[in-house]
Every structure is written in C-alpha cells, then in structure tokens.
Length: 77
Image (cartoon, rainbow, N blue to C red):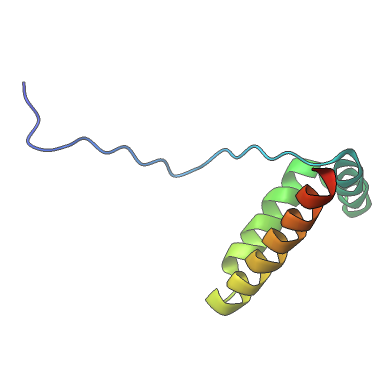
C-alpha cells in the first residue's frame, strides 16, 4: 500500500552526546555529587533550565557558550 504523503518520524525524547574536557567532566561530576544527582541528571536539568528561559536570555547564554568554545578551540589549535 502506498502512503499518501511523506512519512515523518518525531520522537518525544532526544539523546545528545557532548564532549567535555577532563576538567569539565570532573566539575560536572563534583557538582552532581554535591547535589545528590547523577552527572546525567544534572546535565539534563541544566539543559532543561536553559531551554525554559526567555528567548533573549537563552540567546545571550548561547552566545556566551559559543564564544567560550571559540576561545578554547583557538587556544587548542
């Protein structure tokens, strides 16, 4: 049987993989331990909190993160 249109598949959840420096990974682990969370739960909560902020706040935070990453990559290059 042919479909009437294109098939789209949307998921209600998403898995994300990020690369952290050893220092960042350790900091995440320490903060998670201090809060009684797993590192994964703390990262999930941080992303959820960031996404829940107003658009202007989110854009400013995203720009800060991108600028920090660019500075880090420049130093490593």
